[in-house]
Figure (cartoon, helix red, strand yellow):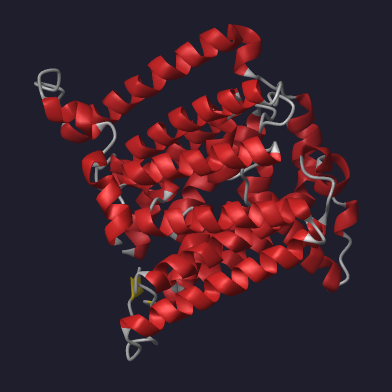
Length: 403
């Protein structure tokens, strides 16, 4: 969807590395200063930098995990996402036990209702139209993709619209819907057993869908190695600077998400912080976001800090910087302009749908789906299923009107 027009084409590799080191030093200094005012934001910024680096090196994009299933019949990223959820859920359980009971109160465990279904459909559709998920948008912004900056504008617009329009979705669905924390029904042993059996089954199902057959897999030694792709080369990839496999990206993301949950006591999320940024910008144009349903009724689900104090705003910003650092360090940063106005329009529309649906469903691909599923919340699995359906519909529109 973009043409690689490099504004840094005359810059040699060494200069990009020097810029990377400058970005790192400035980031560290800003985090130290930030820590003096808002320790939660400083901690989130540290993990955001790590997440941005991992996303850039592994090209781990949730959009591909949902979109490629239908568009190119490929499930490589899909299977990596399943691995990510399995590992992170085990990590969350370990953090829960070690810290004396973080779940369910501190997890992302939200009501399951019609808003979840509607949000999932709109999110999946918008994700394909925009060309990326929310975390993928931030990662590509750091790599120099200008179209994703348009998507980001759409994200802010959609987040503001969704925060305001929750005055409809709240009384209509959110307030009337049950919160289903799986261990409340199955116990911890049953919940872990469910995840350990269900997720590998979904992994095999995805592999069967991609290959069209499971014949010979039981006797194929390579099959077991494929569950965690290319792990023998993973350590070398980190050391040599080569791109990471999706499997390595999943493991690194799971470790990062678990450590953030363990140290901060809350899972990773993006769109809550972006909504607070949208709220702050709304104040600048004389709107009154403090009267919106999101800020008056649902703020208890988030940090008590609002607008520019919200920790996840700095987590989101740090993802961009972490991706910028990674792309510069490995001499991959380029300014890439959109191919045409058609794609600029699709990026804006898709981004707006992503922002709006994230408020309706109460989370995006990273917080609502990944962190939610890892928190053993049933809403996240339903959200993910309808993201898949929305991605299918979005793929139909993409193939017909955008290619």
